[in-house]
Length: 480
Image (cartoon, rainbow, N blue to C red):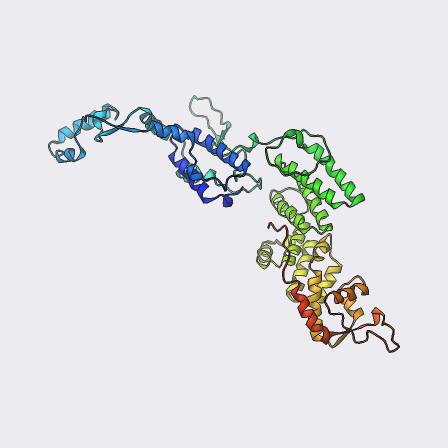
């Protein structure tokens, strides 16, 4: 769960808890905060909990200790009286200062306030804080900023690794090199300092023990059991099995169930390596072949995160797919952002260059070039283009019907990259645009399809209405 998805009430509650923490209960407050947040995330109650009513036990015990009781008698007069008599003699004031210094500020007669703490715990905390100031090493500007916020900055870090957790860096530790000084005997060794404000996700990571190659996908409603999770060596065997079965059977329902189960096992074990990239790439290709853009887009989003970690795969291939997907969804803002981020090396990659050429053809309404690129689409780009090629065909027909009086059906068949003349005629019929000048020859028999002449002017209104069908894009599975 990333920082942006935290509700404001939760952020305010965490800040309040950390602000109320003292030197004596800081560790207890941090540990209890981690426990409460982790349990709320695991139970899915982060957005439904009334955080203003949640109280930490560590802070409750502090509130009970720091109750105030009025003193029945006062050893020193009020501050107003002290101020009125301050001009009596300089010697008297100097003597009082020396007395305070000698008693180290612990004498009750030195306090002008009529209220004192009932116990000595607060005094001990004050001493500990003073001592800690002299023991802490010089902090860097970045650490000063974190300290000023009471450690809250470490709770709201970005989920840059896509772990799907509470937005905290797993197992974050600090490194400090202690240099040798005097006769202390330090040899400049690097020691690990664990940050208590950061959840150590390694403590919650499981390692599977299941040896089953096939397992149905089930949504997790509780903490997973290692006996139900397959370790990496078993998952590698499973992938080979799924590749073989898909090649021989093409059963997408089975493949989808098994791949989602594999992805779940990788996620709960926090496995992010080259094998993880391979699983998501293969699943994405199978989803494209099965025309499941929703599942493909989920794989594409995860692959973007994995590529950013520097893992090996086929980033240029899937970059070209992403461009094609944005062309399908007509997402101009994301397309502009993506084009601005492309490097020269990426632009020269054959697959990416083809996608950019498609983008240029659509931007200039050059349907001749678009359909030539459709025929020569590399890798699996054609599977994505299949989702919006009909839209572009109807757009081209609207232009052609306005520009020409008549056109041979054979010309439309070749220009718009149909598979056959029958498919061309069927497409026109579905959009009520199958209007011909010579549907029936003079002898009364039906004219062969390759000899039909399309009546552009009569079909123009049907083409305009047909374009309305493609104005809304189905964004099923959109997670970008």
